[in-house]
Amino acid sequence: MKAPIRVAVTGAAGNIGYSLLWRLASGSCFGPDQPMILQLLEITPVMDRLAGVVMELTDSAFPLVNDIVATDDANVAFRDADAIFLVGSRPRSKDMDRADLVAANGPIFVGQGRAIGESASRSVKVITVGNPCNTNCLIARANAKGLDGSCFSAMTRLDQNRAVGQVAAKLGVPPAQVQDVFVWGNHSDKMYPDLRLAKVSNLPALGQLDSAWIEGEFRTTVATRGKAIIQARGASSAASAASAAVDHMADWWRGTGERVVSMAIPSQGWYDVPEGLVFSFPVRVDAEGRISVVEGLEIDQATRDRILANVSDLQTEREAVAELL
Ligand code: NAD
Ligand code: LMR
Image (cartoon, rainbow, N blue to C red; front, side, top):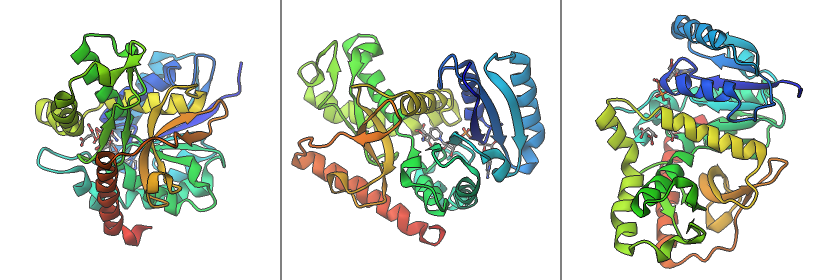
């Protein structure tokens, strides 16, 4: 049996947490032979609710869960953590954009970033889910002294999965037949789901889909799906978000092979995206967990304009949190 890894989840008593923890504990993310210690963080007023979640996890008797730590101290939650899911933060309501959350949620990622820098494993893999996730990741990274930028990421996998779901439904194929769809930019309405590399049943997707549908209904549906779910469900997406977080971390932990996936990571200037902005790129991950951006893709004017719109969106968010960086 492998040695247990330490997996931290913040906002563990929230809606995403309630779905995510069971997927992690069952082995869906880190593999069926990887034991773990779950380190769960909540705010003090919610510790009773977290105790209930811990009771249910205990009652699920997962063979891979060696121990569960429940705490309101970020340094305890992140101690020696190998993987961290930064979920804990407020979701938006119907009339808000995700960027409107930055004033409420941004400060959370200052203290948690510091605690990650002080306490986590030096090779920790951090996924930021709490919105606005690209900029919250930027804040956490800026405050995590002594950790490399390659430890940090934000989640655009839900947008990728939504794009795959739309293409699969349109062509009447199972999602497994849809490969190499990815998303550029920010987890905001400006995001750009790109089908130029995509294959459906091993043939180029572009040859099988009407360009008016791609430019119209497809892009709009993917970019505004979060709000549509809030309107329909009366609550932010939760199970699909947890599932996407598992997909993102599983690919980071175990590698993608030749598959192309979306991860928002601190830019090193790829595709002229300013250094440091946490931007979603097409990436592959090798068996050692190293993420590499797929470089050399042709950038036509329409793609350039969309990338620039996302850069501008993220620069505006960055200016709004300048004092937190
Ligand atoms: P929720 O309100 O159900 O749960 C959030 C939990 O976080 C609560 O239990 C709360 O007590 C806890 N929390 C708040 N501040 C905390 C802190 N400082 N430390 C630890 N825990 C803290 O919300 P949810 O539905 O689970 O959503 C969580 C976040 O994820 C929201 O910001 C939401 O917008 C975001 N989200 C992102 C994506 C994405 O694709 N990136 C998708 C869905 C939701
Ligand atoms: C989503 O995309 O579903 C989440 O980011 C929640 C939201 O506010 O849209």
